[in-house]
Image 1 (cartoon, rainbow, N blue to C red):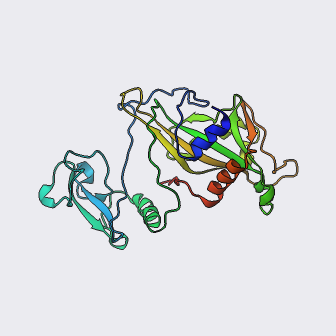
Image 2: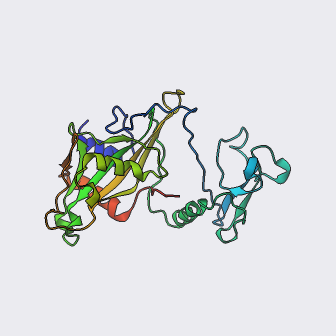
Image 3: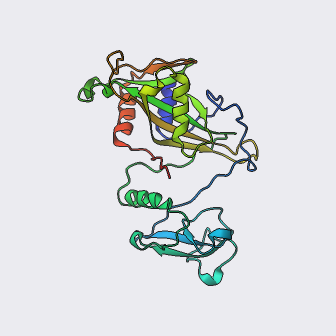
Length: 285
């Protein structure tokens, strides 16, 4: 598959098999359900723009409220009513709809307020298309990075002459990097740029714009429990310096290079996603 075809698939939210890691910590091991835990929650609204909240029943969280999370129990898929206190069990006590301005005071962690606010904005005016996971196996947690540098960094008024480059390996593959143990997703892109451009890294700004696609399978325990996130990243210079041409991408090392996008349709689509933010945003909680 050509690089152009690869980029087209990634931009459409489609997946690609992970065959190689271009950057990974020394201790990177296949993900299993014993060494990795994925925390998943849902932001669910009704027609009144109220958000669904669950009252916790476990341990130190007993009695506090949070977004629905965890596995789905038998019978819940077709359930037509909210769980009542009379139906309390070891997983949860009850469920209620809440208006954003009248959320319960004893929320387990305030980090969910950012997610709720983002959900309300999307519910009212969606700014990116629905994104469904692609059914492809992966044995680690990693990111495939569509990492772009544009000449508009130097002169944004000349959009008609805008050029764009993508970071690729020497064999013209989009870089795939194993995720590092860190509190946010954006660390992976920064680690990759530091590895590829060590001599100029401190003068660069690495901006993870958002997620273009998600790949997961999970059918074979210990072999397919990983996740690959296809992410869009914009690389910019922090400020202009006389000895640096900010209209050209920075020098690369360690087996990577820049590939200029000459296909007008691809260039336009990449620039639109960067400028309009029409992709799934990354929320740092």
